[in-house]
Figure 1 (cartoon, rainbow over the protein chains, first blue to last red):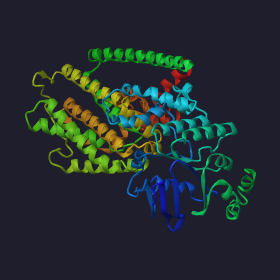
Figure 2: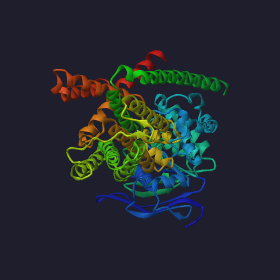
Figure 3: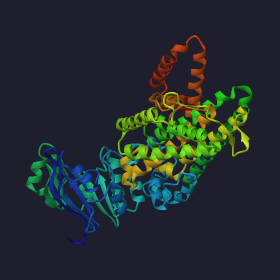
Figure 4: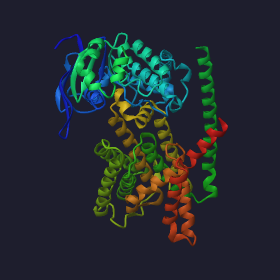
Length: 257
Length: 327
């Protein structure tokens, strides 16, 4: 295994009572790239995400982070390693303020997260950094709003700011533009491009125009197995990929040229 | 960023004003609590304070960690029996008895917590209920609990060896002090760095995990704090009534604390206090009236009405109303 891959999976398999959702997937994510995982509905993209971050336990297979096995680690340990994921539905803390959402991510390294006898004002020293992060995704003006009141697109931006607060080396984004209007999609694409500087991003994405704009490398999954791999031009020309998308996203594959 | 700054300071000012209002509210309450025993029957007031503390402990878990325990009676009873047994058997001062009782509940809470915390929702409730039932039958059979008679005639003794607690007024102020200590501890826990993480876990546990938090451990700590304070309430109650009985360990008690918390307002600091006062006063008044046999039915109806129409509880609904009309 090589050093240039920050995240590597070998023979990753997940079986649910005889149904194989993910079938010996090999995945190599190169340091500093934006890598997309695409495929028709039910191809097992989110399952792969859940396996990589241990929200599901693989039936078989090997996962390595910076050439070190993370097979035995739990989800929270993987996060502390610097591999932070997002979720398909926006993952915010709805009844905390926007600022608190980011601050709770900044808080852990302080080492006072178990201190139930201290006043929460000890966290105020993190406010500046939290505001900086909010500013970077255009949310500084909303800092004191209860998160549930934010529109959907802004919730996703907040989610990104919260992820960035952890200074992750690898970000795993699960459909970051899902359910968004055009303007929001463009903004999030810019945010991801900005956030990806100096980091590695692995993203599941349905919107192929987003993929074509952002991603260096694409892995196509179909029925739990890797169908094709390469840059956008290669993958979109591949007849097997076209066939897999036929009847569902075929027009989108064509349209993205 | 200039607009941002003014906005934040405006929000902070609003928060300061709110804090000031809240402090005034608590000061008024404290003044009322201090004169209350001259107006009302002190033993009844002490009963309210003990159950209010118990409900607050339960609320810490349900309202701030999102965990519905159906076995909190076990902690109330364990504190009560331990304190009652020690005070009846050895000549120790009541505060030592209460501290030991609280510690016993803390240990039991750690044990319960480790077994139950990995499950969620109804499974968590069922495990806590099953464990609490085991504790109930253990206390029914054990020698030191006095079986169905319970422990009677527990001496109140002299607090720190100085203050004679057989005087109801002295006892009342001691119970008030214990209650305030417990209430402030919960208030601080909720508004602490730990409380922030707990809130995040309640709101979205998978996300909290993806931020690197080992959520099981946080929930366990919350569970243990809650069990400890429930034990403190039980211990204090035993000293007040000079009695530790099986009723405290019965699952009925676990249900009653849920009722108190929901009626008062789950997830609000003061709700459980109000809920405990409301339920106990109602029980007290009804049991003296011609409706005495109907207490459980009436409480059941109130519970249903509460869940159907004002789910946020008394304090929760008032807060909503204030927010809608004065903000």
